[in-house]
Amino acid sequence: MRCDFRGADLSGGDFSNAWFTDAVLAGVRLVEASFYRADLQSADLTGADLTGADLVKANLDEAVLRSARLDGADLVGASLCDVDASGASFRGTRFLGASLIDTDLRGADLSDAVFDENLFEIKVDDSTVVRGLTGTVFGPITVFSGESSREVADAELEAWVGARGGQVQVIPPRRPPR
Image (cartoon, rainbow, N blue to C red; front, side, top):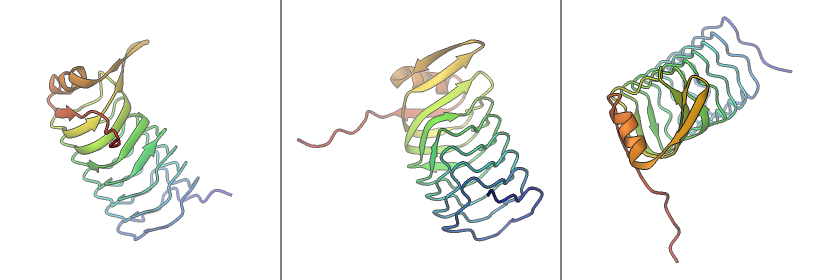
């Protein structure tokens, strides 16, 4: 049984450590809500407003964030694996130490977002905005253009972001000491 919160305004709520697996939160207002260590796996957050939300260490794996607004949200240590965040807005969002693996950010706005040592295996396209994006990432990313796609990594990834007004440093994977 899925919990359905459509149409609710849960702004400012404290949902730390809460379990929202498979929940329907489409279109819900969650402005400045706290989801510290919350489990939002497979949740539908399509069009939700999470402006300024605390999603530190939240599990968003397999969630749907299409056209959601996460401007100024804090995603430190969050997991966003296999997430559809196409068309979402992440303006000024902090992704420090977050894992973005197989995350679809086509058409998303990452203006002024901050990354620090992020797993950054994302899907982007020509409409993905990265102006002002800064930080350090592990790549690669997949860039879609029409029906074709190509993998972009290392210096080419830095140049791709730089050509669009952002500045990232791609760091090599850490190897355990011998």
